[in-house]
Image (cartoon, rainbow, N blue to C red; front, top):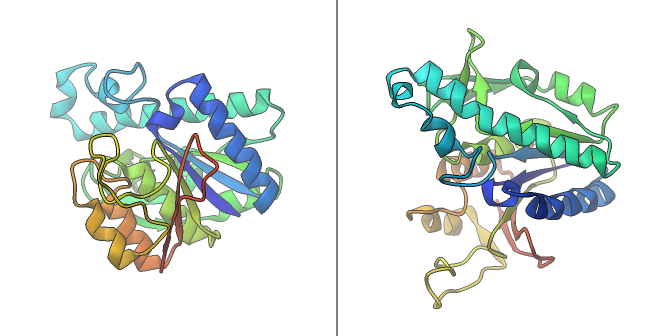
Length: 243
């Protein structure tokens, strides 16, 4: 089993999601079971992006509980869309969300921590479905309230599930083909990495737009969870981050 994580750019339109679906098909062929973690669709002002949902009203800034509930909707919509498009392609799947993910959170709204993960429902569902869709970025506290994991928190969802489920690794699909020493969109001088240790990888996340959430990478280091960072539009091997 592997975890595949698709971010906002990968999910933003049907053409991009078709690429996601091909990677999911490949993952099922190679690893038999795939748990797919999705981010909200698009970025910035895109219709269902996190930023758009949080800008519905400035009143959300006055209630962390309401803000997290609104933000969580982006990944729920993404999950529904991905599940429906997989079904249309003949790929059996189901969505695991809310309490059923088993992700228990605590701390502050908008930047919660994962307290524990009860994997029983996911493992039981994997007995009847080889492909599960899980909305990232969110868990639930003891009171049954949605809590989000900080910006980029879908990365943490993927890694935490991988550790709890003892998955082979997490595949992250990005708009770049691998980890680079600098953003290739803005800098022509960069080094492409084939393999990195976590000690080498973590400093590369100290930038304005890290390739994955640093909190998630620290969790992966702590749990010795291998990561494979690849391009959504590429068959290249990408970069392995290994314990």
